[in-house]
Length: 171
Image 1 (tube, rainbow, N blue to C red):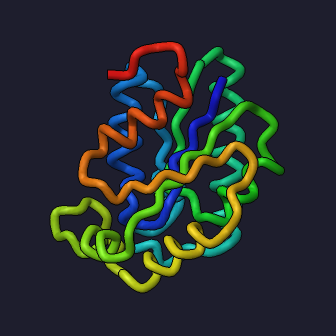
Image 2: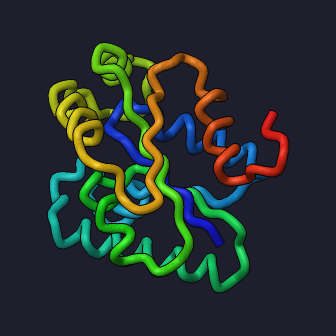
Image 3: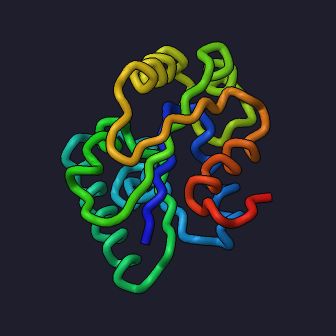
């Protein structure tokens, strides 16, 4: 099984790319990490803390092991904090690829403030800092950084599919 991590700052296109990738890979499981945390957090996330985030991350690792046990070929995970993405090679023993999306700062700010966006996250400064820190750091094991500034998410999905399935056509 290959775990596919779609990472990046808020507004980088993680959700859009993950959903399109799920569709192209014929409905493979997609885990939005924030949804795991919703199981035990108050609706406004006022009780979010390091311990509950750690517990949710440990639950994610268990879930991934279980999908592998039952023979799934791929599973997609998104919405991890960058610190979790960077720790992944040390805590996960299975096969994985990390596709980290970066975006031009002006475009990122526009996306974060877009009122049609599903996320309630609207902190452009935090998103911009997160995005820049990803751009500035070295790639980690099995990580591929992709500039997702262009407006056609299908192009980004095609790049990911070319890496995952190099011998098949990815139309």
